[in-house]
Image 1 (cartoon, helix red, strand yellow):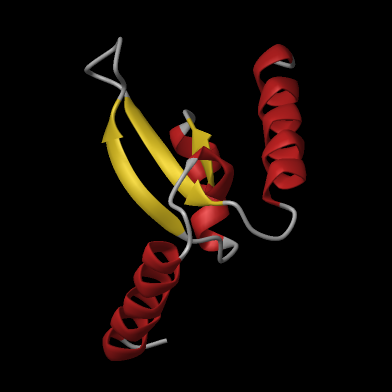
Image 2 (cartoon, helix red, strand yellow):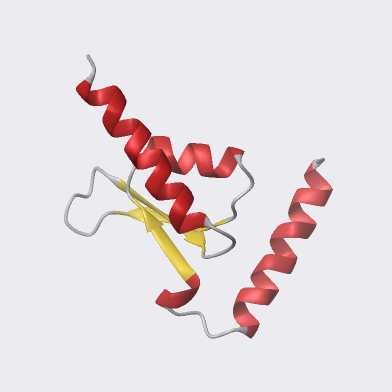
Length: 87
């Protein structure tokens, strides 16, 4: 995908999000940078990136709720935990 196509996809997504009620049901929040990166590489679309409310040095990633994103986040979280405990 080239830059123009990427920008066009972003415009269409933004238009779609403005047309629907932009509420918490349309979004999924991810706190892990690693999981957010993997989701982006898998083609999930990000809506926003903002600072964490309580921990200003951390970042929150907001994704469009689409497909099986909740299940994928759960799977990636389990993989991350397994790596952490098997040091």
